Amino acid sequence: MWKPAEKILYEAQPGHWPSADEAARARLFQPLSVGRLRLASRTWVPAMVPWRATEEGDVTDEVIGWYRRYAEGRPGAIVVEATGVRDIPSGPLLRIGDDRFIPGLKRIVDAVREASDGKTRLFIQLIDFLAIRRRPEPAKYFESYLRVTDRLRRALGAEDWPEARVREHLRGLPEAELEGLLSARELEALRYGYRERVTDLDLPHIAALPRVLPDLFAAAARRAERAGFDGVELHYAHAYTMASFLSATNTRSDGYGGAREARLRLPLEVHAAVRAATGKDFVVGCRYLADECIDGGSGVEDACAFGVAFARAGMDFLSLSRGGKFDDAKQPAIGWAAYPYTGRSGYECMPARHSDAFGPFGRNVEATARVRAAVRGAGCATPVVVAGGMHSFEQAEAVLQADQADIVGFARQALADPDWFEKVRSGHGDAVRVCRYTNYCEGLDQKHKQVTCELWDREALDAPDATFSVDGKRRLLAPHWQRRPNP
Ligand SMILES: Cc1cc2nc3c(=O)[nH]c(=O)nc-3n(C[C@H](O)[C@H](O)[C@H](O)COP(=O)(O)O)c2cc1C
Ligand code: SF4
View 1 (spheres, rainbow, N blue to C red):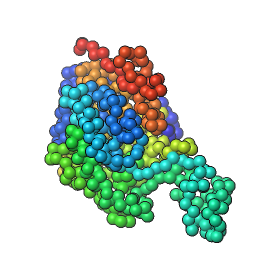
View 2 (cartoon, rainbow, N blue to C red):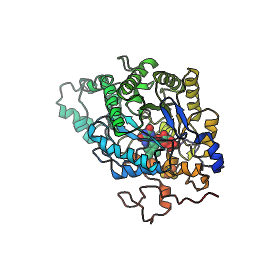
View 3 (cartoon, helix red, strand yellow):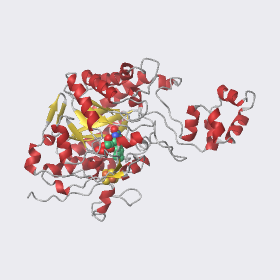
View 4 (cartoon, rainbow, N blue to C red):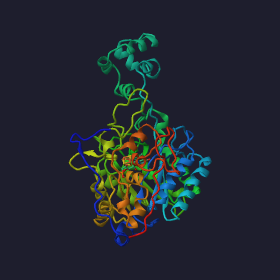
């Protein structure tokens, strides 16, 4: 992963942990009730893909275990990992693109209800993504993937060569010469692997996205409702289709790109379709970026305008993330696909312990606060969720007290210790397993391996209830908390 040049090492400093009485008075543990969103506390576990579904996108016992474990800590809400709205092969990512997925998803709902005693609200993140291929062997690329176009033939002066000769010739050329011959996209496909963009209007299925996506998201949301979820989070963040529509880099010329209003059009149409397809109490919110953190990308002013538009459209919550784009991702090794969390924008999304003068904690707070202020300024009370390096009670409470956000998201901290919420609420904060922001978990995510936390393996590897990853080396779930009686 990319690291800031300063490489200053930070250790998470949880500071003061509250007594049970102090926690009971804290805003963090007060219920929230705004519109359809009703939470028992203002704590939130943002979506995290654990790579535990089957290759067919089905829920497994490991998926159930993952969510049950979070629910035991009783956060205000859990958002189930990014789940594909289409029924297409996508590796061990959950899918919701067909009714046959409903019974499996319902098992997650039942497990979370039971483990949290009905205290935790459960949402599922709905995602659409475009095609991305692995970085090819150069020989294979020239042999079969590259399209031999008239433009390329002209550039080579090879108008009348047989196609096989063109391919053979290109294969033998040095990099420097290829740079003068191949288009930017062809070079990208060679060096990073082919990747579709929402601006590829010459591809009929990309041109058709505004026609097909509202129905796909609406059908997925209806299935989520039938499975018993409290609501859905529309994934408008990071490197995926809907975020690409919102992006300032979206130059589509069909009314869905260019000016801010045009870039907002499809996200609003998807929301409207989802709202119309689901019941009156069903929660529909979205996750999007407070800042894309890439050259030429959308910044916080765009995010404020998007937030106001989403709030006016009736979104039930706005969850703000940042960065996580393909645009600045590192070149993958041959045989691997580009991963959108390897560049500077990836660092902004999941900031790690080696950082710059600002450090990895609360990097998204200021931008989120600006979005919230814009939403409030427009007269909307829509709850706003902040995330990014949040791990301590003092930090979370300060953000809420300062009206910078309404709900605090703890992703890696909840992964490191799913009991954070119960421990802190009950005055046992000193028992929290504090995240070290090493991004070991994120490295597993990048390799599509079952996600675990390195801290779990330092305790109780021999516990009788421990279950292990397929390589047999890592605990699949956080060790259980042996609760002490209150002092
Ligand atoms: C293993 C892993 C998987 C993630 N998967 C998702 C995802 O499916 N959807 C999403 O919006 N964010 C995803 N994220 C990003 C987190 O939700 C969160 O925004 C990020 O980790 C920063 O918050 P934190 O500092 O509290 O971890 C993932 C993060 C990790 C570590
Ligand atoms: S592996 Fe554990 S300690 Fe390291 S960043 Fe992930 S959750 Fe935190």
